[in-house]
Length: 246
Image (cartoon, rainbow, N blue to C red):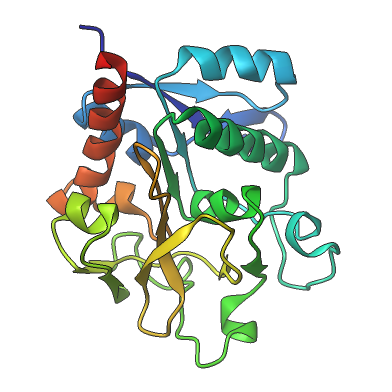
């Protein structure tokens, strides 16, 4: 049996001297998928709808990683918040399209940090443009400039009967926190299954889907030393195998 192919969206960077544009994906995502038994396939930006559909039809699952902010016009009708940074409308469009196709077809999906947010936006939900500035009683969620990526910033409480809890093997986990945005209004049909101490939604899923999970933290950075975090990638791959056997 061939190893499952997991399509991973990418983001734009420039080389160190700023002269060469690049498509990128952080190695920890690739490593976690390989440990899970999958072959990661990087999906370039700039693809046409037909090209994107051809890629989507070939891969067995999708991973939507973290990155810059989502264009606010996609969830609130305007672009006017001073904290917005790193917007790439092309990436937004590609990831929203892929999420919708995965939901429509039942293709397994794991969405991480920004991916968790775009999962919600793609299905009609909205975001806090900046959690700390806009959400009442918010704790600090953006440790990007403060601590190493593996730093466990706070705990997350997970609903006991959720798929996420079953996959993690726990109803409370300590997580890293590397974001300034978060889910505000939940999309119709999406279930919130995990929360930070301040009430921010940290985990979402679709009840009637083989495997569609979003988490606000970065399990790829914790996977090498925390088996529960690697289990999220394992579950994605297991779901592809089960789906392919049907």
